[in-house]
Length: 377
Image (cartoon, rainbow, N blue to C red):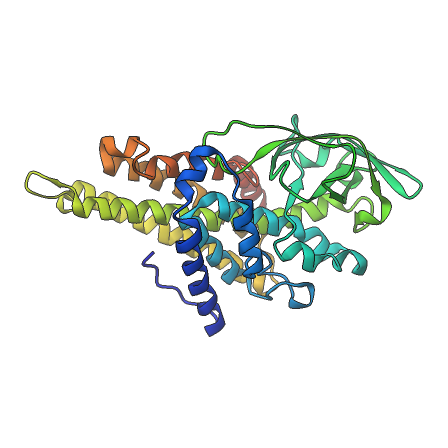
């Protein structure tokens, strides 16, 4: 990836170099095979955790690396460049730790080193079958009974379902609307936590997605994160950060497609010369390169606002919207550059195109991002 990066510290540069070496050695050679088999690379996530890449934006006292968000996002981009499913897994896991890291009790935070070290994998349980985007009206219910909550309901589209060791579950403990939502930290082995059959997805086939049924699952009351009724605020706060993670993944995927298409165009000859010399195609590549650079700039600008402690939610929505739309356009154009060869699995661009579609949907559809942005106007 020939990207000129302006990093805040020398340490950040070393971290990016470590990420590239690890991703080139461990991720890139396995991506196509695992995607074809639909196999989740759990051991590779453990390896990334042991290498310190699963807790980058969290404080060192909790087992994190204390890195700025702008550095963490560029690590995600490097991972997505080699294998989107792994980068998405890192983003989802980082998001799943956010409620405890920011809102948890000191006792709950004592679990963070274990959560961030790679041995445990997390997931977020927010969406439901009838309300993916309408989180304020979720129906999964948790009823307090002495020292336990009894949780009943169904969550949908859960990345890492059946693979995660813990779930940050958003459920209703009070009345209707946002004020009745709370957050519980639930161990995957809790009786009554029942992952369902995996969804058969168009792309990201090595990333397990499924419904989870909570059948009167008894969760200790000390697993309540924050106060009762604060769950919706926790979820929205986490989603702002998670949208930046998806934007970074989109940039990495788009850059991979651009680089592959450019190299192909240099080598492929028609009418006696490389096809990159034909203006119709070279201008297409120029537009692709410009869009990727713009998506990266927008994503990092939002991250720097977050690092500075300033409001960044609307800018995160813009970044997620723009970067994922760019990933869809650029991967589609990369297939076009390769022509018929782009449509077959011998080249990765057809997989990139299928994967890009997911990024326009996860962490809030792009229609929801437009709603967030337009309301702010």
